[in-house]
Length: 274
Length: 146
Length: 220
Image 1 (cartoon, rainbow over the protein chains, first blue to last red):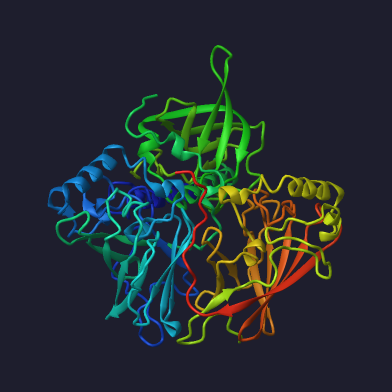
Image 2: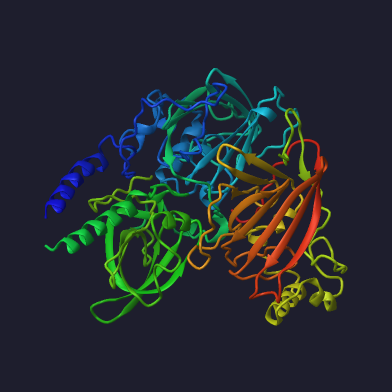
């Protein structure tokens, strides 16, 4: 009886920490609030690590609800960067604004990512089920491996090369990078237009020049900021981003989006009532 | 309550907490475009089919209404790996067994829903569905992923 | 410790497989790059089939691979991915004791092999995948990988070789010289084949970076 009472007491302590709506990680996660004062790990040479340790396995969870544009009233805004612009502040060209609003109105039902299309740019950083970072300083590359959706990998060259002149547009573009202190800066061009730049439907064109800043302010967060320089869609350069959260214990696993993808036929957007 | 039964209750509750706490809330698609978070539902029926596939596992359940009419309902769950992390095994459910499934209705008027929780009636075991709709300890719906 | 990937400051990746289809070692049959036999009568020589498996293989061959799941970009799985042009990188992650194999062809996907001594799951209980659950260890300079837990929704080779969920693959990766990767695979699926059988081929180190390619079905 006493054991039961003690247990119920313990449960009372646990439950409030996990109730959605409070600051207990993103809503729906039910994880206790991580200690954001815990520093990011470093390698033996002092180099910042974007991964875990052999005794502390995990990877990054691309927060599906995170947005590059601040969207009041929508969930997951607390993982978005406080510097994100509102819709009215984003320097859209008129066609791009219309496209963004249309994608939003349809509740992002038409996202190519849902049809298993590889999606580069900031969209990659929404990939569900785990993102691994393979930092390969000896060969001057960083490879990002994503579990969900296209189950693919993206490579950033840190060997000082320039972008090739005759790039064929691709899903992930051509990425070159360098470190600025503990921040990884990635410069990408050469995107095709067959995917959405972010999950919320931020438009882009093949003229897009994307700069990404990735840093790890503490053990549990990866800060992602995208700067879009796309004269085909925007009148000025603008930035936005979000925090990815550490997913403790998560390991990469086999996954194939094309296996039994029934969702596209059922994603009808806001119309339809049962 | 005898000590042994108390422990059993505690362990069962812990198992439920672990199962639900381990699941993520993300998916490869917009939840809101496909399912209606304002339309929670619960059905009880007999498992007719299980698809252990990505991007989502599916279970299909024959539900008999009060008039004796049988309808087959399909439920979308998370990917198999996530379900297995939450304690499922390939043989956790058998064809022909009775289950209660709670979730949110599909928007397209089909007999289809996103599962939040599956309860096996033979054992009382609760299996979280690693749903993109999110799950809570208190049972409230948290369809957070837009 | 052998290094399967680039040396410091090196470029390059593995490509140009010396075989284009999976055939039992020591058997010589005429076959095109898609795995289509020139002479259907050679079918029973390709691998030690159980009777049902031979019949299915012959059907797939006669049907010109109309049912190949890779038409819908489902697959390719191993060892098929090691026979596909497009490029491969083998990354030894010492932090976590894992090896990643990154593929340029197929779905530009990847698989992970765990080298931390874990036991593989029970294939009766684990949901089968395309690359299976892979655990590895070193035997000298050879990486030995054991994989179980496969589904049957893909073809593990081009040409239509069948398999069941009982499939157990043993793969051996070695690098006898800088430019050569040797790959040997043993197929053990007693429901499909009358005995374990193996095949081996090589890939060559080529300069440059793995090109971007993604399987597309033509559906939006």
